[in-house]
Amino acid sequence: MTPRRLTSLALTAVVAVLVWVFLWPTFLGGAATYTVVAGPSMEPTYESGDLVIVREQRTYSEGDIIAYDTENGPVIHRIVDGDGTNGYITQGDNNDAVDSWQPTHEDVIGKPWLHVPEIGNYLIFARWMLITPPFPYALAGAVFLYLVLRPDRTTERALHTPTTEPAGEDTALIVDSESDVTRT
Image 1 (tube, rainbow, N blue to C red):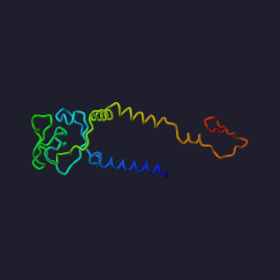
Image 2: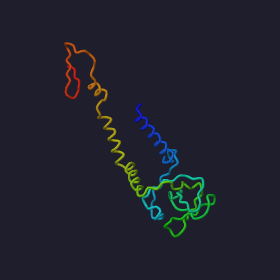
Image 3: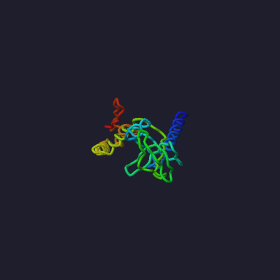
Image 4: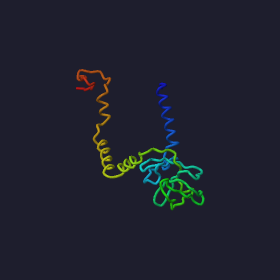
């Protein structure tokens, strides 16, 4: 193995480990939860359509921004008071009043770890495209047609592989300009 190939494999392994440790989603066994901000309640800190990757922490305190589960879906707001046992009092940076929810430590998904402005809307669109008909049906149909209509690879390889048989009186070897071998 060449030094360049070895370096490439080592870098790939390092990147894979870093992605797994820091960015692998919780639903696949990782530690990161991907949250897309919806609405103006956290402006100017976060705007609608921003992607916020949150990671669970051992403790949260006043001033921390947290993402937490509610019956209406996840919310990302700032802790203004309270504790993890009796419930945090949270409020959006752009809201005048505190939230009606008081999430406990068990309700908290995590604390922001990475913020990527504006990309959340593109992710939502891509997800919608992948799960909304007719796209999945068209993709499945294209894969099916490719598998059914593709040329047989063993026949293709046999046509391009010269044999070591000597050409006898009954056989003539014809080699055309594209290196195809034909026996006649």
